[in-house]
Every structure is written in C-alpha cells, then in structure tokens.
Length: 206
View: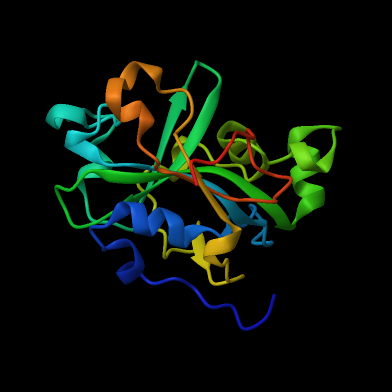
C-alpha cells in the first residue's frame, strides 16, 4: 500500500475515549511480520473502557497493577493482556497520563497479508480469521511482546484507510461483562453494521 497515512499520537490523546473508539472504525491496523512484510486489517468493531469509574475496566476504582500499568501512561500505547489462559487481547490506551482509558479492538477485516493470517489461524472460512479479539491477535501475531508498544512505532501502527459514515455504525452494549452491574449496559461498543467480520452480532441500541 503506497502513500500510507499514519495516525499520530494526537489522535489518541483525546480524553473522550468513546469518540476515539468510534473514530477507530475504518482505520487500518498494521502489524508487520518478522521480515517486515505488512499484515493488516481494517478495524470493524471496538469497545471503550472508561477507567476508574467503569466497573468493567481493569483500572476500576483506581486499581493499579503490573498488568495494567501501561494504561496509566500516555495515550497511543498498546495494552495487551492474556485472558482465559488462552488468548491475548489488544487494546489502545487513550488520553493523557493517569487517565487509564482504553479501547479494545474486537474485530478487523483482513486487508494485507491474508495468507500469513491463514497460516497462523489454520484452515477456516476467511470471515472467521479475525472476527474476535483473540482471533485477530493470533492472525496478526499480537502477544505480550507488544504490551506497551508505541502505536506510532515500526512494530504496530494505525493508518487512515476508509471513512465510515454515522449511518454505517451500529452501537450497543459491550460483550461478556455482566459482572459490571449498571455499567454492563453502557452503549460503548461500536461496529460496522454490515461487516461480515464483526465478532458477535446483536441488535444495535440505535
């Protein structure tokens, strides 16, 4: 892809994490392989987690651990954690320091390096390659080594790719956070309405 247009740190320094999440739809996530070849996918599904006041966030109540320390740093860093003893999940830190908000990348649509993704994920329908936070981490070779990586670095970055209109965006509750009480109903999940790569279809809130 020629004339790449990378997203700068300014994009991630905004304090409105819900807006950051929504604006990530249509952006291109690039994680080159060990030989420097581009492997990428268009972001089609995200969830916002709003830190200290969000019962679904790792930093709820001001919780600060070795695991989530990167979320307290400046926006524009990757936050990668292991879940269920099986999968990694990729998040982007947003806002200024000591503002532990993140956006979970739930699904992407493969764009470049799809053969590499197929090799990493195994034989399956291409729609299933990256249609979930754990799946996309395997397909893009995202693991703990990228935790804390700068999203403007040579290891992982974001580019302008496709403009997603408001009419194309669905909004709903986040997935798998029933423990979060009233925060489980916050409409902080956004996805491209007609994408075949979204992780889990559900009726939009609007």
